[in-house]
Length: 302
Image (cartoon, rainbow, N blue to C red; front, side, top):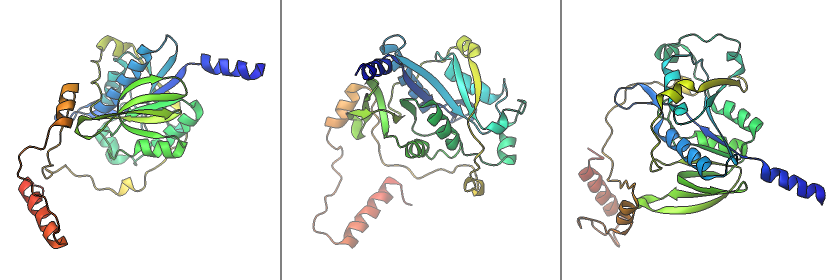
């Protein structure tokens, strides 16, 4: 019994290991690399959890997985330092073993993308997460560069056997065994969830905006590389044909509420307009015709 009590006391005294996964973002107008908007919001939630916890109760680290070299002073280096400017002392670069012995040199991102094979980074993260065994992993819902499929949280959760919670806008508390968080729902509503740790959560775009990056802190921070396995090539992605994006059809109206007042109005307000039509007892052909008519009116189909 004494040994059991001592082990429980030791676990209680250990800090909560929290990992924030970050990626390279891209400005929608200029196309320049920057910190990703959703990943910055995820890191902001982790920093808020660390601030509201007791001193030393939370051990926070940020990871960026990369299959290519990141040279000091390069555009990728400058973009990742935007996360360091939020208050981090260091950022871990999770890289393949084969890159550790090679010297870092300046690399043109566009030339590298054209000449080098496509690298899958999620196996590197799975290997490193199994080694580090954190209790909580927080990331954005979708990347701004690369495929941007939003599958990374699902692949990590499936490989690790952890629960995955999407659309988180706030982390209220974490006692080391369970996490209490708010999840975003349609029409500005929120749902409180209690999740057993270890767990992986992805952040919604309605989460609090990230703080401004401090230039001096970004310069002082350190980017430390850490080898975490062999290269994994994405043979399927290498067959993709990449072309400039074209204008997409207009989406249906979507309510975006950020403040509590806007969320309440969106949840309580009745549908506007009154031009809708309720169909009852109609055939499948008549229902399909009305749907096509609505899609044409909204500009989805032309």
